Image 1 (spheres, rainbow, N blue to C red):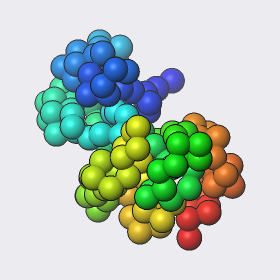
Image 2: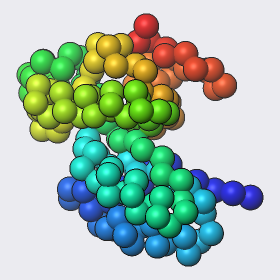
Image 3: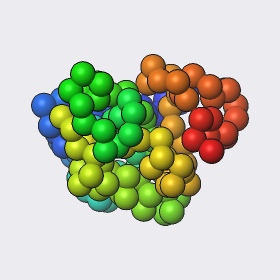
Image 4: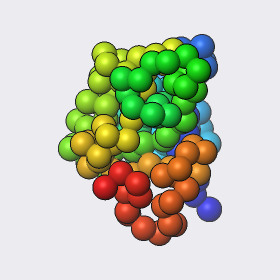
Amino acid sequence: MKFTHLHLHSHYSLLDGMSKIEEIVARVKELGMDSVALTDHGVMYGTIEFYKKAKAAGIKPVIGAELYLAPRRLYNKEPQLDSGNFHLLVFAKNLVGYRNLMKLTSIAHLEGFYYKPRIDKELLRTYRDFGMFDRRNPPCDFGKKIRPGTTAHAGIH
């Protein structure tokens, strides 16, 4: 049975990940896996390095990120209401998806930063052609609305 790790942090996930990209690719190869995802927290700093090293090792790189979803809007920054966030695994299915993920993470840092780089549902509506996301990871309202086996963007139409 084949296995693809879809939730993996590298040393680019500051204070959370420890493995360097080269070590990840070597371990994936050692375990006989043919693909792996990189989903660093709120950033895509390691994406190019990951892509190049995985391809060179004959491993299919799955480009993604673990984004922080603001409880309300991106611009809301009230301590009692907006300091929490939900985690959302997002994966690019093609070049458009990759570019949209880059936009999401950039906007999260430049406009949505409040304790962490955050996005909101409005940004997901705007850049929804990224690919897919993991509905099980976040305990948020729209994540629970997605039915398995569908491609609907529940709650973000």
